[in-house]
Amino acid sequence: MLRIEGRIVNHDADFQGSLEIDTGTGLILNVGPSTGHSDVDTTGCIIFPGFGDLHVHAREDVTGLQNYKEDFTTLATAAIHGGVTHVADMPNNVVAPVDDARYSAKEHLTTASPVHITLYGGIGPGTTPLARHVPYKAFMGPSVGDLFFASQEQLKKAIANYRGQNVSFHCEDPEILNAHRGAATHEARRPAAAEMTATEFALHLIEKYELVGKLCHYSTRDGLKKVIAAKKRGVNVTCEVTPHHLFFDDSMLTEDNRLWLQMNPPLRSPEDRLEMIAALQRGDIDYIATDHAPHTIAEKLQGVSGVPHLDTYGAFATWLMAEHNFTPQEIARVCAHNPGKWVREFLSSGNGNGYGNGYGSIAPGYLGSLTIIDLTKPYKVTRETILTKCGWSPFEGFTFPGCVRHTVLRGKVYTR
Ligand SMILES: [Zn+2]
Picture 1 (cartoon, rainbow, N blue to C red):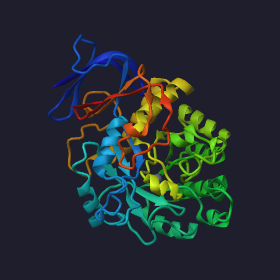
Picture 2 (picture 1 turned 90 degrees about the vertical axis):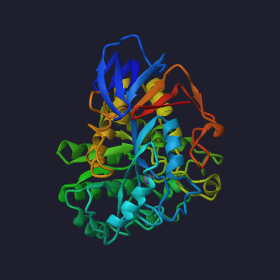
Picture 3 (picture 1 turned 180 degrees about the vertical axis):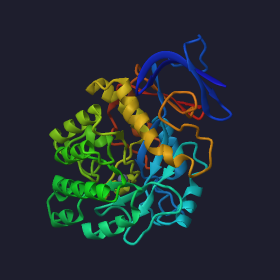
């Protein structure tokens, strides 16, 4: 039995108390008043339900060809450092998980990871749903790998096979990207209009085929208006935002950082960035999902898109609290509760039972996975402190106001 006391914060509660985790089952047994005994030092800390990142690229697949960037073991190490207790991994692998056999083969690679990994199935031209209930990802614009569509018509034909399924969309219209491919900068080659058009089309598909829809790494304020309007009329859609679209904008780009801060979709305007922060706080954006993309330093210098984030997930949450007045309950909502709700339906369809009520709340019957954040100890990000295999961070040199003190995975405590 593991007993932890301190300030406990759920999306709907903030109190001094204690909790007990059965270290055999990994589930929370009791939550109650303080008793004066804690197995873990939580002085100056907030005890959150375990954070979940619904958008990572671990890069490992059955070929192992991209294990030089990251694998499921190094991904878990970086996740624990960042206070992330479960992740969902994208399917754009060399051997993409687009059918039952390939999905199971990839899932087999994840079993040694102490951090729970949910796998997305891929949707590409001509694919059909798996026998298992899994989430899917559709890439609209060109990305890493072969899983993308050249046109809206081609995408629509594929999505018609997935009626009623859980589908996440990368919203950048391939035809608009193609029309801008000669522009001077990465940002100009992938304009906001591409996200706007792709958003309208994704919302149309979600409505028409009754999907459980999610829009990935949202970045533009005009597109977001469409998402908010769709939610209002009852479309079943939720929305992610990345730390980089909340922290950086195109006014901060210099010749020195331009390659490091290249990703898809690209950095947007300061107005877009501030609206993403406000929308996340209001609840119009549902999740902080990182799009963790562990490209090597050599690849970044050659212009590969994407940035790694898992190491800094929890520290980033302290920046939102200190800089943008997010309450701890708001952090619990976007980092733990909403990701927990999203992943719940997939937990028991995979590696069997034992997940109880899953992730997202500190309450009896939920998993004893916690993110314990120290608000009194700043974290200066340096290359030496980063555990992702790719070995760098877009936040190098920046000091976050707080850090992750302990990450608890099903009753097992990891302290750094
Ligand atoms: Zn991604």
